[in-house]
Amino acid sequence: MVASPSAPVGTRPNASPSAAGAWQPRPEQSRARDPDETGFVVRDGVRIAWERYGSGEPTILLLPTWTIIHSRFWKAQIPYLARLFRVVTFDGRGNGRSDRPSDPAAYAATEFVADALAVLDATGTERAVVAGLSMGAAYVLMLSGDHPERVLGTVYLGAALPLADRDPGRDEVPFDDDVGRDEGWARYNAFSWRRDWPGFVEFFFGEVFSETHSTKQIEDALDWGLETDADTMVTAEHAPYIETTENGVGLTGRAAALALAARSRCPSLVIHGTSDRIIPFAVGERLAEALGATLVAMEGSGHDVLGREPVLANLLIRDFVRGLERGS
Image: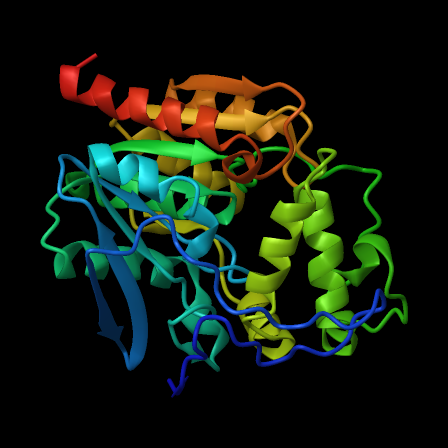
């Protein structure tokens, strides 16, 4: 496996103009709280950048999501949660200060889970409450189902899990065939990404933040999405997703998700926006049912409740963690 040098935060390897016009790079914004400790773990030659905030107990591990953005998407949670608990984050491989491997297998969900375990070890964390947004929720589920000894509790936000059918009205095209269209969901295509990566990022985060008055959230996400590039994202798209083993048999997709949920014994909280355009609300319902977990339905919210409803999301996470401390 060959790891390429990671791009510094605030730079863009592929900042070409989108159909909406040129998007100019901006330096990283000042943080509400700087990390108390930073470092790297190296696995199979791939460097993973991590940060630690605060020193309370327990530790909350905030996992990466899809490679399209790095750990700064937790920016509205870290300052508040770090005043109460110990918070650990890391940039997922393919973005931020972590490396960008050139092998699709390096982006398998199992690799992100192994990175999380390595970061827990590097930060001296025996067990943690683990939270994940979208694809990060799959990593949460794999950690809790396959490594229960490291997990105190789990929080799933907008979980991208194969537990419901996709929206039949979504215009989907084969990912590896050039359909010659760069509009709507037809942009979810390797050729379209390489033609106009900024255009896809802008479209995608417009769908993520479907609520009105989301300009700031979309601008931030566009900045972060342009810190990776189309070739890296195409490579990551070909990686295996959720998987596990049950009685010596390899499982993927819905069967893997249900098997992992059945093995997850820790307390769990599921949060999902009722107006999520990326992952149907039914996924959150079915995940909560499979886990025997509390489901918080965010009325009218889209996919990223962390960015659009940060205060409520922070209080939900805080109360969940405090409930673990009380044993309730």
